[in-house]
Image 1 (cartoon, rainbow, N blue to C red):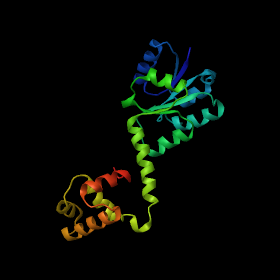
Image 2 (tube, rainbow, N blue to C red):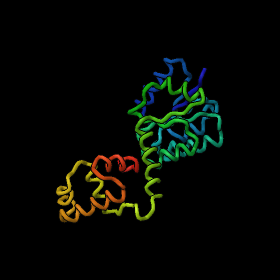
Image 3 (cartoon, helix red, strand yellow):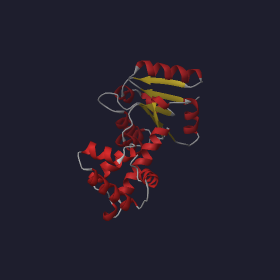
Image 4 (cartoon, rainbow, N blue to C red):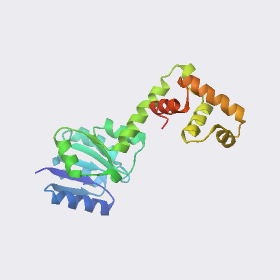
Length: 208
């Protein structure tokens, strides 16, 4: 029987998850904080550990790092509402095999089976954040003459939002002619000829 631990300080959410997993035949333990988990010897005998991030003094990310050292065979999955780039990549660096938003929890049984079979999982929103982060690195690696200035990036984001050049000018407090010059420079640097190509290139570079 697969042994699963849950470290979660939201009692209602924890109860829901535990009851669900128990109905599916798993052995389940719950701890309300990272510290209570760490002090309990049972925590070292798990197959899978589900971790929230915001737990109090010690975060789920901190705990994942410690567990990776003390019990490297335990498979760790983050289940949280936090989706900052910093937390996502920290979790992956500390050996977590899954990063799932609570709003995208889906079929937890299938997730656990996937992890037990040697797989890994991130939910769609997290996958998008990871891809966008890599795209940002691509932007930083562009040759200097192809990089947008801060002002040009601001104009680009307004264009992406659907605003026309006069509206961008008014919003930014610049003349329409200046806004048009920024747009022209953006087209040149991105090597595009129209708004459709600009949107595609901006997506590739991680602007949205």
